[in-house]
Amino acid sequence: MGKRFPGVVAVSGVSLRIDPGEVHVFAGENGAGKSTLMKLIAQVEPPTSGTVALGGRTAQYQGPGAARKLGVAMVHQEFALAPDLSVAENLFIGHEPGRGGWISRSAERRAARELLARVGLDVDPNRRVSTLPTAAQQRIEIAKALAVQAGVLILDEPTASLTEREAGELFGIIRELTAQGIAVLYISHRLDEIFEVGDRVTVMRDGEVAGTHPVGEIDETGLVRLMVGREVDDLYPRSDREVGRVRLQVDGLGRREQLHDISFEVRAGEILGMAGLVGAGRTELARAVFGAEPPDSGSIALDGRRLRIRDPADAISAGIGYLTESRKADGLAMQLGVDKNITMARLPMRAGLIDLRAEHRTAERFRERLGIRVPRVGRPVRMLSGGNQQKVVLARWLETGAEVLFFDEPGRGMDVGAKAEMFQQLDLLAGQGKAVVLISSYLPELLNMCDRILVLRGGRIAGQLQRAEFSEERVVALATGAKGNHA
Ligand SMILES: Nc1ncnc2c1ncn2[C@@H]1O[C@H](COP(=O)(O)OP(=O)(O)OP(=O)(O)O)[C@@H](O)[C@H]1O
Ligand SMILES: [Mg+2]
Image (cartoon, rainbow, N blue to C red; front, side, top):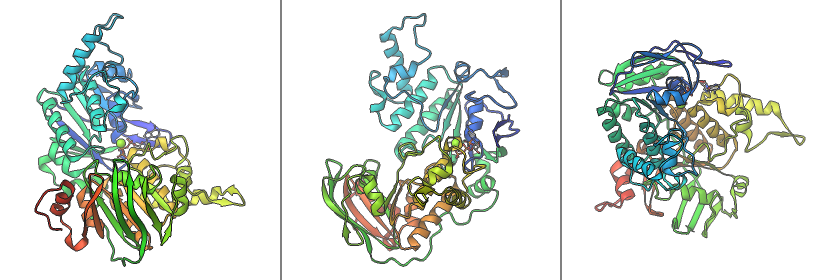
């Protein structure tokens, strides 16, 4: 099949066979065409060329509703639930049980409970979707797909917003579905999970299939080489930096039930890691310092000067930046160009007017440096692949010139090569004497990139580790409060 967008060939000449009951993983660089290919299979987008056949019968393009009825359902990178409707309403939108105009509420609730049980969810079907955590919303998406007796279930980066435990539970659900003969198509950037859940893996590159292999017949190095077309020898570039004077000083910070008496400093040239389980307060802490959810108590000082931060605008003008964990919340202006989105936080001005040429130059520099895949920088961000949107957000914060930068799960959705590039940028910032805070749930990132790691638990600082003391066990012990730890 093929799919062309104006100025971009997203998918070209792809032929594939999907077997019942297999987990077929799709991997490849940001912008390689994975999501687009899945949208062609799920008929979310019409193909420019080619067809999809289901059970040997060619299906004409009729839109996602028709594809669902034929048993192909897709859970998107960004969920598509109606937040203000109930769980049951979301499950049956468009195909209510008890057709013929009149929907029996009790029949709907019963059917809902059965579906939710299949994805291991025990929630009230009357509950509003917006009140549920991310992992539960995702399971509702999957349950919704099952509501139409899916034969093919497509999951686009499903673990990107899940904790390790939730991801493990998702793999369990996937195994149950494949045991029932459902084929699962699974997009992922995480090498470890490719080998954990996958039966076969197809690597895409520049819109084409670079290769399909049973996972037992390929290793990580081979997979990375197929993805980027070369060896990536250093996934975590780190230079010898001088850690200097204290730049950010936080003292006794507290906020409601979320944060308690938090004190720490970040020094010039330092990358400080923040570890902890989901809910430990890492994001809340960053948001408090950034003024997004101002603290009730405590003080924040930069270079020895006490700051008064009431909102993010105060933080930005004081020189504090925060890359949030969610692209949507980070306010990417989807209709505006890549260039405008990058320079938004610090518009290049000349005589009171926005300097368009400077804006263009800046955007070009970042396109090059981070490998943002876009034919021209004026193109609206909504036309970019998920990982490339993430790079735009990253570029914005690299561009603000902030002195203290919080990066909250910055590698989410990025391919391995792009991640290495991003870490290099963080290392460069620190090398310039800035203070960098890296929040990550993926321990290898923290252990490799940071000078020091602060571990949070229950909204408090549970401990900190110097680089010489780093070990996965120590971080986990502090994060979980396990006994027998002397770090
Ligand atoms: N609606 C659209 N309009 C224009 N171009 C698009 C559109 N959707 C995707 N593209 C382009 O098609 C190409 C493939 O994008 P796609 O989203 O399929 O990549 P991907 O492999 O899923 O990447 P990622 O890992 O970043 O999610 C990219 O160059 C992207 O910019
Ligand atoms: Mg994608």
